[in-house]
Image (cartoon, rainbow, N blue to C red):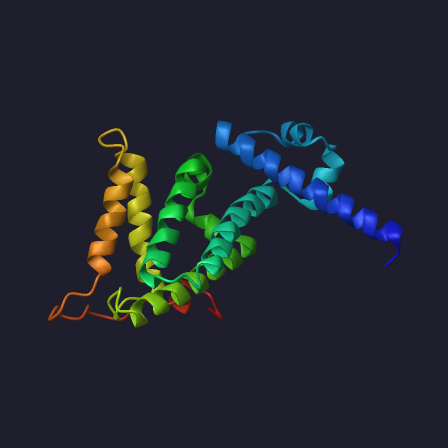
Length: 210
């Protein structure tokens, strides 16, 4: 690759990231109704550049959501060798809840149909993979009961997100309370009965290869 080609590729990558950053800020502040012209202007590029990177506004939205999910997954990777496996798992969940609250308007506006988007599905699969590995470490260390899976944890986490959104006006610490409740529920109790049924998997959710 020539120097000129590398420069063009670098410029294209910078423009794409500017668009993602601008879209994320505007979506967070004003919701998903922001127009593409405003996003392009905020990013300092033309509409043509926007549509060269993202075929539609929906593709841009999906890319913003996926980027946030990949950031969480990357953070999980960084915690994989943490000294305390239990704290690594619950620390990631705490950080993920914080991210979800910061970008609440964005995530709330996405209906279930968005989960069928290939870009978002790939990011979700990565989150589940990272959570699964952190969970396995925590289970091996005896910090989490052995009969739960990553999807179980995500289902509980979604409940914590809903509580944090719906009841923050009742108690600003509701999010912390729900995370504490999750941890208490997942902590092994000697003599406790095993959970009924089996832990759901990505395949159960329609992911062919998990």
